[in-house]
Image (cartoon, rainbow, N blue to C red; front, side):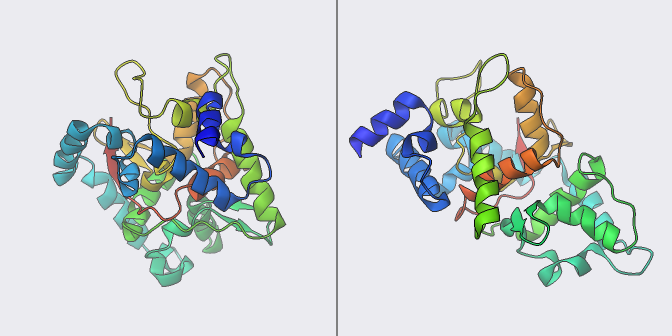
Length: 276
């Protein structure tokens, strides 16, 4: 194991070092082992706090902010949208098992019939169409607001992403490839920052968050009520390394979210959080 870890650290690409034949669960276990070995004092569940897991003082400040979160107005607006009937009298709750409660951790999933990954935001917009309404569009503010409220219905649910069947595995592997591929003028991969450099050293004044736990707490609020969805963050990261991001809701973005979410399986979701 010591030899393996040295290879992982040297390469900075954990899954790449494990090898192309590793399955999703082997990938997840390798990442968990990597971080828990590198940072033995950090409890696994604390990785849902992102970079704050490495910063006890920052985590305490975060918890104080969350005692009176500055974005409750957006969550309230999302609830009103969620509860408002469509023209046919139904609501968003009618589209989801258990009225949408404790299901967000099952997304994204691979739809074998459609042959593609379906994210929670895809499902929200599809619900509108199924009830005779116009779709908002996956990059719209409205989808983000609905997403932020809907995830409060699954707060604390453990991530439970499934990769079953050849189509699902192919999508997972494509998302994995995107995460580990270097791109842009800076020639960075997602893994460069969120595996190799996660936890330190600082990037400017900030610590970088680790891949495990990242997908549990989106969308996030920055600077008060500025809402950022997970795929908006992907796009922002690509732009920061001077790469052209794929379109939000595209196959590439959805496959990336599928892989990214799977490796946080078993960790509790943190709905509606504040980040700097």
